[in-house]
Length: 280
Image (tube, rainbow, N blue to C red; front, side, top):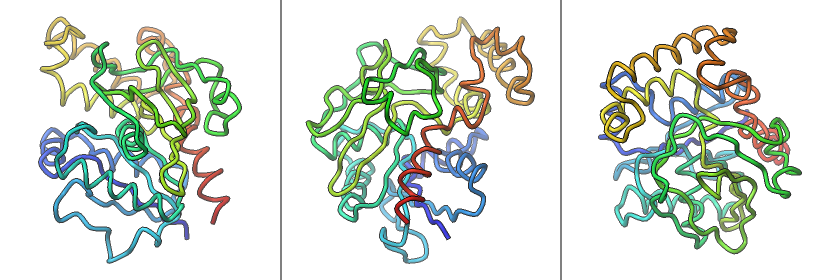
């Protein structure tokens, strides 16, 4: 039985707030995304941002075939327990040599763990969809992108970005907003396959995040007012309910890179096939 450990990036108060608003936590959306393709996997969650967060069932990191680091609203450069404990757990996982995958927060703490740097993006928040991501020469030949085109879009939401990769890291993709959109980051004996965007997100998750951050989205000028935000999320919700609506997809400026589950999640699936299942 293949077992993966999902490291939830958010502490208890942020998870509670998400649930109050009917928003799935980072680990919940990841679990749904992986289970949709590998229903036989065992998926456990560790809340490493919590002081009492422990691996379920008294297991150790060595009990798992891989570690997945989810997104988070935290900042990788803050010296608080919720951050440093997750970096420490990643470093411990790296010492086992286990396969590791991370999105957004996962990329950022991998960079910090290996000696790189993360900071607030001077271009502000990249939200909704990261547009026109282009693999580098190394990325074009990498199995993480075997299901992607030469240029692609992906779901995203982040303020921070990796401003300096560790020396041993390999840049795999960039776009106009963030130079580091994907990278391989060696941590200890492990390679962390990581992306700045969120291949685990579905359209419903974006609707939920717009709901969670509605005040920010309006204040920062992404939407003129609540009515404009509601109209946009209504279209997203309708497309989530019925992805085979070309008119709605066209209005939203997206295509099967977003609406097709296999294409959107190609990086996760590639990591599982190449790193997890081949190394068992």
